[in-house]
Length: 194
Image 1 (cartoon, rainbow, N blue to C red):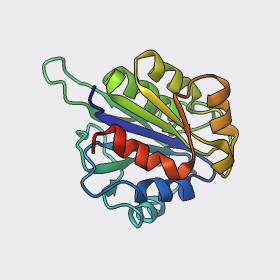
Image 2 (cartoon, rainbow, N blue to C red):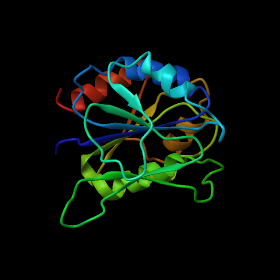
Image 3 (cartoon, rainbow, N blue to C red):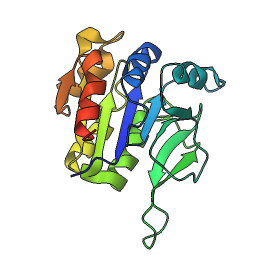
C-alpha cells in the first residue's frame, strides 16, 4: 500500500528532534507531512521559521479547509487542533480543519487529535511518528492508527530529550518500530518508496 500521509507529534525537546528529522527528508519527498509540536498558545511564527532553516521542503501553517498536497511540511498553528477531513464522498481529496475545542491531554494542538483524524482518513496509507515529550499525548492516536492498519514509529527513548512520551507509547504496545532519532528520516524515505 502506498503511503499518502505522515503525521508527527512531539513536545518537550521537539525543536531539536524535528531539526534532525526534517533535514533528512529530500527536496522532492513525495508525501505530505503534518506536525503537532506542543507550544504556548500565544506562540508566534518563530517555530515555523526555525524549522524552515532545516528543511528542503516548504514549512507552512495550514489554513482551515486547505487542501493537503505533497511537497509541504504542515505545522499545526498555536492554540488550534489540526485535523484531517474529507468534506465530500464525491470528492475524496483530504483537507485540513482547524478548531478550538477543549485541550486534549492538556494540549491544543493535540497529537491525539491529529493522529486519530488522520487514521480515519488515510487508514493503512498513513505513518505516524511520535518523538520526544513529557506527557502521554499521541498514545491513543497511535492505538487508533494501528487498528486501522497504519504504521507507527516511536523515537528510541534513549535518544529523546524527554523520554516520557515515547516510553508511554512503547509501554502501551502501540509502536510498530522503535528507532533512534537519526534513523527515522531514512526509514520514512524508504517506506515512501523514494
